[in-house]
Image (cartoon, one colour):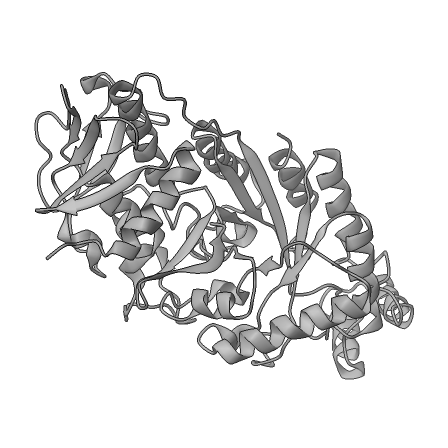
Length: 450
């Protein structure tokens, strides 16, 4: 019995083709995986395939491999984490007349991490029914903040250059993707009269700030057709300007449903203020996407309905895009259901996959890739764009809790630099409403400067 199905091997071949720029062939025989390059006789063998990389579990060990000890250059740190049940051999990589043998299951690890097989069917979930970082193998063994798939594929690329000396491997260039979940596009515009009165009362009775109370009323009264520029949550112009100054495109993901009234947005995409905002975003060359409501993550029909609703509003406003993507609200995700629902909704990509409780590389990579559904054993017409860091994950008290401090900036920047070291993509989520101090603006401005 083989570990990999034919479909899984074809999918892995596509991953390698995207990464290295060549059409390799993979074959599994007698629990060994052979990687060959058509038109050549030499090959690379992986002779230590791991059954754990085909199971949903986190209860196994992690070794460390010293790259320089075998004459290889590690892209981030010399010791590379190697999740495995078995001990690593004294020599992990051997070159010989027929090519090379790697005594570690690099492609099994790639399959396990990219498909998020580890998460399927798990019950150790948080209060939002999310698989948390603290339950993951990566967190437990200290490599969550490193893109270990990219590190291992970098090593594999070095082996390829030795086995096929004349080969030219595809070169990648570091880049950034910035996106903004529009949970709260305005602090006042979409409040009910009762809600506004509560806000004004809080300003007077709790904060003793009568001018702020009057200002909130004035902004509310003047936000009927467009979100007032002085609304605290209206940072859209500033965010777009920051992206434009750095040669980036901002993506704004809008909620288009209300499956939990306490956790979803107060606005609807058909409202004139939102239509106007979407038109401005599009006219400035930025992207509009979907942020499915709270209880859609395991209800595919709702994701389809909300995606259709977004596209309908955009069509009515003359907004056309080559691709439609987005991210799940609260990062809620069921690997067995959610990614297929995105594909069935005819979405181009999803950028949910980071953990809410810790930043880092949930998929082990900072490169976009084609989704693979292990239940149906098929690739999906969907790209996974792994999220590396979210604002509140690093800053908010109930998560990492670093505050809007230099320490927080350094944590974000460390993750960004790890993406840079593997020539990958630093994908950052910063909510338009997550700017409560000058330090928040400063961290963001510095962070998206290349």
